[in-house]
Amino acid sequence: MSEEEFWESTPAFFSFRQKAHAEKFRNEWEQTRYIAFVVAKTVDSKNRLKKPSQLLPFDWDAKPDLKKLEDFTQEERAKFDKFDEEADEILKATNPEMYAKYMAAKEAAKNQT
View 1 (spheres, rainbow, N blue to C red):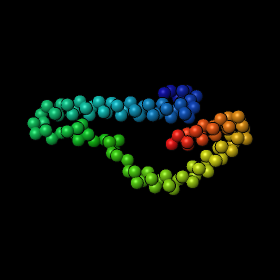
View 2: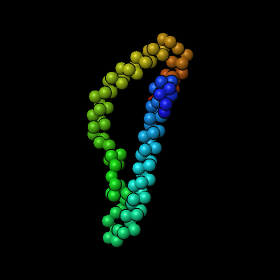
View 3: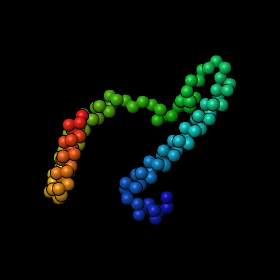
View 4: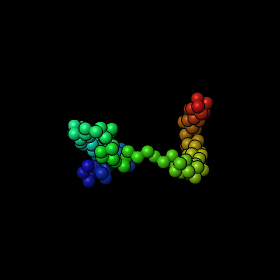
C-alpha cells in the first residue's frame, strides 16, 4: 500500500486490508508447516507426529480461554448496552423511518432465538 493509498483510505478499508494481509501471512506459514510435516512424516517410523501443530506450533493454534471471555463480557456488557441505547436514540431522532425498521428487525431477531 502506497502512502497515497493509505491517506485516501477509510478506516474500514484499512482494517480490511490489514486483516487480509495478516490472513495471507498466516496461510503462508500454514503451507510451510504442512510441507515440513509431510517431509518429517517420511522419517517418522514410530509414528510420533500425529498433526502438523505438533511439529511447529503457532500462537493461533491455542484455544481461547472462555473464562476470560466470559469475564470480559460481564464487565463490559453495561457499557455496550448503554452505547446501544444511545445509538438507538440518535437513530430515532435523525431517521425515524429507519429506526422503526431497525426496531422491527431487532424484535424479530429476538423472537427467533
